[in-house]
Amino acid sequence: MRFLSFPAAEKLLGRYGVKTVPSVHSGSPQELLSLAGRLKPPFALKATGRGINHKSERGLVALHLHTPAEAVAAARQMATRLTPVERGSVLFVLQEMRSGAEFLVGAKKDASFGCVALFGVGGTGAELYSESTVRLCPLSKQDAAQMLSETKAAAFFSKVGFRGVRVSPDAVEALLLAVSRLALAEGVEEMDLNPVIANSKGLWVADARVFLR
Image (tube, rainbow, N blue to C red; front, side, top):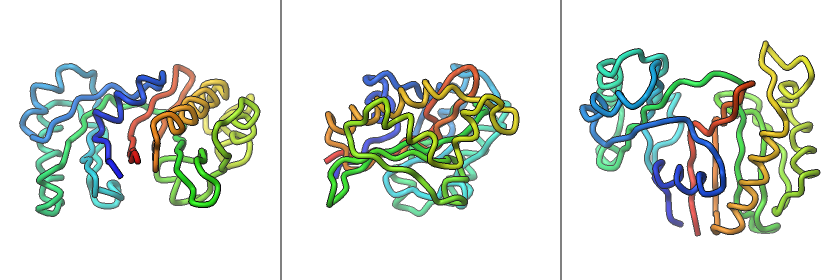
């Protein structure tokens, strides 16, 4: 399998019309000092790489950073939590903060059924609720609409929303259809978009792990 770095995953998603949170990235914490000027604070920072998983639990995510200097300090602290092998290939990704509902959207090649798409609650809630709904690719619009109603995430699509946040189901359905097309066309072995952040203003992928065959 071929692992895509975060910048490569961003480009791939962009070809299918999928928006990502505005970001800059570097393997050097110090370089973030100059790159951060391209973004609007506050920032979110994470350490990414092929073998870097469970970032939140390992202290490899920092939120509500208000200056470039805070971002550099946070990246340096994260570097101390990485193994020597991870430090050799780590990419620090600095992003503009986005707030809203968090979803998980993904795809994988199932040994029995072939390419399938997944949808569920995202962010830390993905592990807390440990639920997702699955459909065979290619998805139809009806498939996508049904997927939105089958997990706890459905509350965000109601007329009143959930906890003050209402999300357009059309936007998430469009994302699911795009992921389905991408997975089939690009030979995706596994793709995990989590979290996908959505609010009344739009929808953005904040993190992506993509493996191609």
